[in-house]
Amino acid sequence: MDPLKGQRTHFPKRAELTHKWVVVDAKDAILGRVSTKIASLLMGKNKTNYQPGQLVGDHVVVINASQVKVSGNKEAEKEYIWHSRYYGGMKTRSYKKQMEIAPDQAVLLTVKGMLPKTKYGRKLLTRVRVFAGAEHNLQGQQPVAK
Image (cartoon, rainbow, N blue to C red; front, side, top):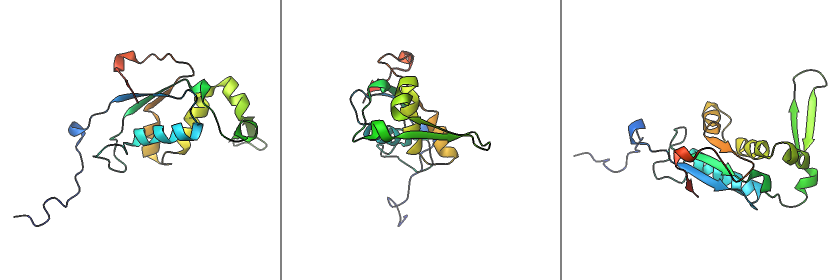
């Protein structure tokens, strides 16, 4: 008889894992709140078989990214900053301008910031698709609304 029966951590095998496709509607949602929800779905923290560092989460399809809201004065003050790694190569873009050019990138960058900064986090980021409008081209995956 095993005295530790029921007290051992179960690591699910790949054959045991099921990955669903989930649609998240970002219309009139706060950017940080919806990004936290997306990151949690990607990592699988809503599942009972969650294991850190293991791909147990779902694939996420985000629609209506152009209609996401931010709280406070972030629309005027928030900036996206990147660098070309050349001298004087720092670029900045305001949140308002980013939403005009590529609202899907704004949501994707926010989700990226909430994921681990490792190989695991980069792998999780490949499982999210962001669309600016209400239409998406992933009907074949039969996504369910969340």
